[in-house]
Image 1: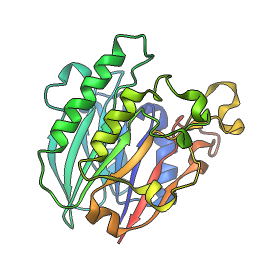
Image 2: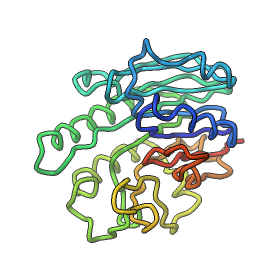
Image 3: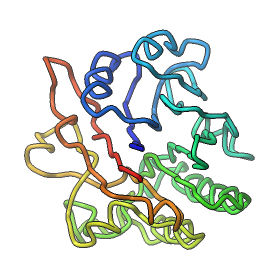
Image 4: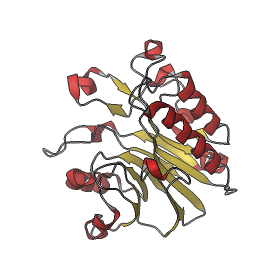
Length: 256
């Protein structure tokens, strides 16, 4: 089974691009973030023509998450309990074969001086509490986490420490989440590799390798044991057939 996560930065602007990726990579389950599309306006027919069904927790102009699948799936949860004011940022489904799959779009925080920053930390506390409530054995938590776990995951290295995404408080929240029994599937296979999943559109950041790794596939021990490969799909951060990519690359893993 091939699973993936991708912040698509606007569904409507990216449909033809997403089609190219789906046809090229043929994932079975995908967590999308930042749809910027209301649930009622989600283009189900477009994806049905490609062989996929979608479970959607959308929002107009901002946020929004979805799970796209070409295997049997049952919706379990929409929204992070107690965090409705932060919008549509979590959705969970039970996937055939006994996999619980959750995708999240975690708050950005904007800057350490902004009011959104302490709210981001509280949102993470809520995610931590919510995640511990399931006793499911084989679980994936994926998405755009808007945190750089270590200096290795930032083009700035230790020079980024203390800035947004790089703060001690954010990293403490990420570590606490991991301590519930999760493993970073990419880092499990590639412990010393510096690789990024997001690059600013401005300043030629992609070509200058000025990126951050903030998009993760996290899994429980059963998911880790099943993981054969994890890929940060840099080719689909580039223009394809004249179409503009998201500022995030897809990340996918092959599970046996």
